Length: 92
Image (tube, rainbow, N blue to C red):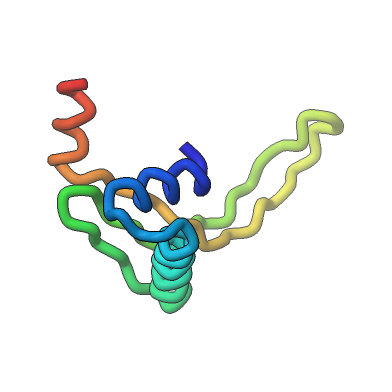
């Protein structure tokens, strides 16, 4: 499912205009992004948690010339599914 398909589903289920569904999705993404950029975690009940974590730098070997390289640390977003989501996925 992509953004267009999600917006179509929302506008049909809520009986709203298409542009309102797109605006809702854009606002949701904007809000999530703002919170994650501040380092906050975002918890969506019965769905899961988005959390910013710091990856440590690591030393690896370049497969082409066998020289050691350092991959710098960086921040990434991890998603931890809720128990309800995991159970729903198992049920099919």
